[in-house]
Length: 329
Image 1 (cartoon, rainbow, N blue to C red):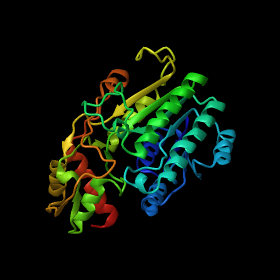
Image 2: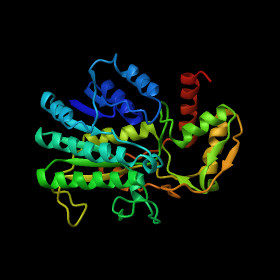
Image 3: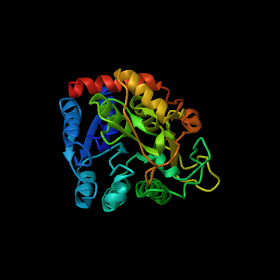
Image 4: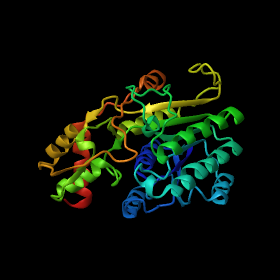
């Protein structure tokens, strides 16, 4: 199989490409290497991929309509895994247009490419942030998600709606994956766990929002990749019966650990892995943040026979080991 992976220099894209290349697939990866976080880390991930047989990389921005059009004209893909996006909840308050360019216009370019070139399955990244102000837990894909509390979340919900429209209109099989706080080696420096480890390792205080009264469904990267790979091989059918209204070949899944952890308990796991105490700077809730995330993964288990399950202690230990190796700590 030949797979297009967008955002291949990103955290999830990098790990997915490694996994699929190891399984003998051809990977065509694109990325614009934007500077939202350390570009050198993205380049280091690419440096791991580029020597591998079957890997091709192209520097390309999602919002480059002509470039994306030419990509689909010049290459043939069995499946597209769309992971590229302008990430980050808080950053969307400072730079909203980046989210429109990448997450809306860019996603439309991908949809058009898939539509016109008979791609068998489009798998795309959504986010647990779409649940917004929801208070019912665990979060299920059947829940109403009409109340996003950040522009980032709104763009991810828009992606789900856009994908459904294309599935309905053009019979394009699409699957959206709502990721829940993904962590692990080669992770994103803008994420809390990375910032916490970095700060504690360097004897600096950590910012703890909502005075630590938060919960997150932390999901280890290998579990996320296993979920993505299984879903890739199961395109939704036009006659599936999971809703009363839509008969489009379209499906949504949560990819989460199904086990939320209190933020203070999470910090304790990091302290134990590093063998150091954190200095905590307790702060109020930030705009766009949610109190809790908690994934219902019954559909994932039912359809592809998998649910994430890596214990937090094990996952953080692996991340800390990578951090020590990469940064020489």
